Amino acid sequence: MKRKINRTSLCWLLVRSLVIAPLIVGSVGVFGLGWWWAMIPALLLNGLNWYRYNKKYEVQIKLEIKALLIALGYYLGVFSVILFMFNFDYLKITDLYPLLLAMPYNLTSLFAGELALYNNFAWFFIGTFWSGILGIGCYKLALKESFKLRKKYLLGLIVVLIISLVPVYQRVIRSQYYVNTYTGNSSELNLNQYRPFRESKKLVHLNKKSNFKITHHYPRLDGATAAYPIYSAMAQTLYSGLNAKQADKIIKVGTTPKAFNNLINKKADVIFMAAPSSDQIKLANRKHVKLKLTKISR
Image (cartoon, rainbow, N blue to C red; front, side, top):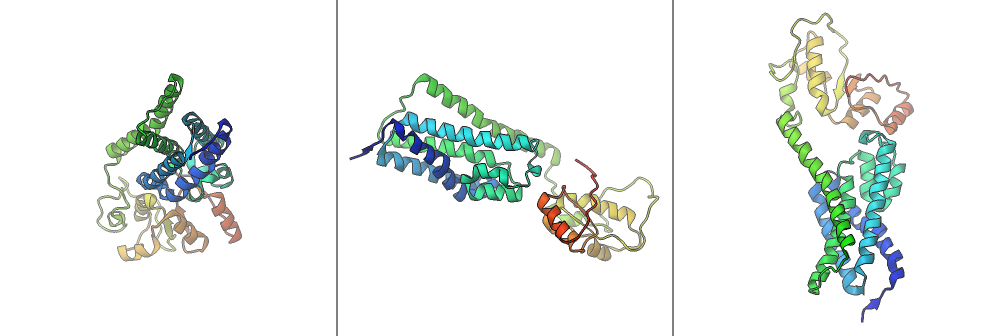
């Protein structure tokens, strides 16, 4: 015997849509922040969760879809407000408190805030919705039943589908742009081609001799991998009297956090990176290190 759930069960369906489903997707699919395909197992698990729920209880499809839509609208709305608060700049979202409103996504929201990985964050909301719809649809197919929805509900789902495909379009366009302009020559693949004081054709150089040279007390440099070709070329132009082996000891390259730690621990004099976060600035203050920030690009 199936336990019937009346119309007031919308409250429970909202709990499932706003809390339980996000916990499943946010915990299991946390690595989807970096690799979109890592979300797939979590979405399949969420679909199975809705399938089994429908199999156990007699649920009204309209109420389920309504609850899923409310959850989707809430999380997309919250994320949009957060982006608006920080001028749609992911790197400025350095505090975790705005993400408390998305906390049912558990590990995902914490990792997103700590690592500033927001490119795939909206996919979690969209994926949770459609995987829930998939689970419900599979149950109906197993019963050899079809969705019997009014035209306005079907139209609404079509609108949601079109909105859901916008990030897909953005990703395709962005990927095509980088393929056409970047040509795959990532500095992360082979840093040796950018090391200074070697016969490297990759490093840029001035068309005339520099009027300024550093011949002793060379500033120790470090920075993000992406910035290495810039400050490596600068060092090769300005530093005089060094060979390749000596240069490797004072011109380092690593991740942004490592470079920043080297700076405040006095293992580097100048670093090249994105603007430090509020947590990094607090860390420098605790170490009694006064930072001098110079904007070189944006």
